[in-house]
Image (cartoon, rainbow, N blue to C red; front, side):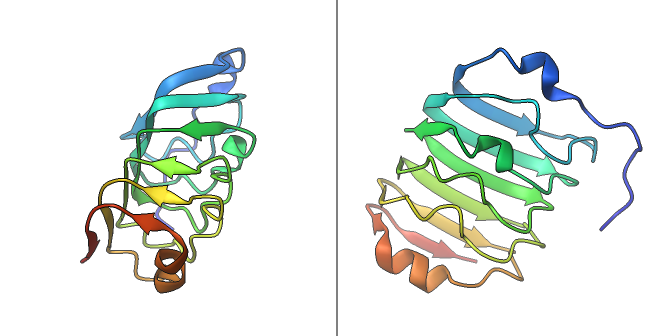
Length: 145
């Protein structure tokens, strides 16, 4: 893992926030290792987009969060797993790119349907994509790069 600044972002200022239409996190400069401090009960409509978040290794703070609608983008993180996304059951799209530490899709076991495209690329340690696709209904294309 690369070296990052010793200062970490503290999300506890958002602890009273219970729901949002979209959770978007990007360009964290290695200052965010987890989403601890978030106590979201729901993300409704806009989905979750996490990109250019090297240093982010855990989504477990989202474990009790209902995520309904919108897409899921995980791009350029240091996540080894996506445990914490058990609240995802239906998405408009799914894009998982350049997560070089990601090993499995465990955490998305409750996802039943993706209306649009599902795309994977640059996740060199990721296994189990075929098993994942065999149990998820995909309305669009499956893209593997």
